[in-house]
Length: 130
Image (tube, rainbow, N blue to C red; front, side, top):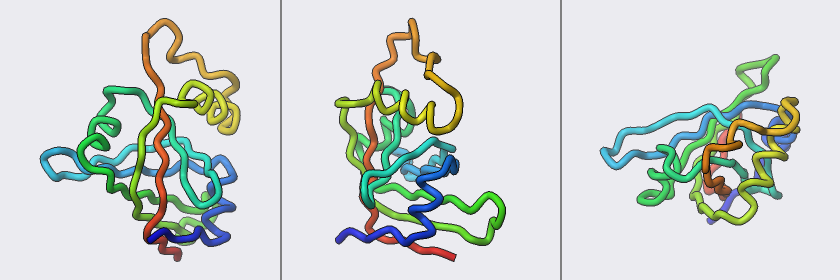
């Protein structure tokens, strides 16, 4: 069952709010990473590189948590649980979109590295706000 995002979540996700994405490692421990994010309706969309810890974790366990808060009012917070899918289609384009959103201009850190960008789509199953 999927959950709809409340207005607070949509407002923060549409702004340049940083979020923490938590995946589950093979040893069962959580792995948290600060990320850029956008959304597609009620789904959260991230970019990562093949072989990074979060991408490897998602190969074996699609459950994730995402947390973020209003930068001026940290007790106005959102916590999301959901399931993630990973796809290579659109990965290079997404990192450029996110880099522009977060005010950094074109994303150049992957140039000359051989990095393969993927899209991580999180479909919320539970959403809590404070």
